[in-house]
Figure (tube, rainbow, N blue to C red):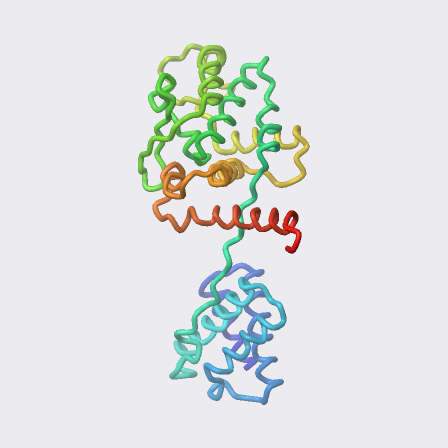
Length: 296
């Protein structure tokens, strides 16, 4: 077996050009698998069955290995057997049709309403960039749009009078999202007091949010802005631009919004993507119940 593992890793290195860390990962997974096989009665490659592989995956599960680790082990075993078939060492693959364990969706990080208030109060609105930042933060929390969507906004996409924005999401799908009163107010201030100074009265610039050079703000630029204000607010957790999107959806559902409306505002093609936020609200509800019910 060691001979074929060595041959397999050589193939991945030379033919596939995989990274050193990836090769080491394949090697560890296969050695762990064959060590398990040997401890449970020595078998040759020809004797290893589908049941042996299933038993190994169950063994990893009982050992408390993460679902992602078990899936990776199965992928390593599959790749190895695929190699052996191509080399005509075997004529049957015992790993075929074995399903990877379903990975639990990790619940997204969200901010409390008081943390959002704290974060959104950080920009210094006595400065032109602070006015811009205040508008951007208010808009992204008011609408739940993605970072790519906010930096892609053009002047014609903002309807201040009617209080909505038009954005283009994944697959270039267009949607209309309402703006709240606070976002409208701060965006008006940005237009009146900040944007024209940032673009230096360059009317040909279409981008709605611009950097200090008067050009469209980049994704990295927005990321730096969020990091700066999160640090300033001393919020002790990792905050990304997407955190405000997650918070937007969760706070809407907590306050009675229906799932379909939230799906539409987020621009999710499938409602199952939006349902992750119901898990957060249920988890919070359970926590409240356990803290407050006398027999919980």
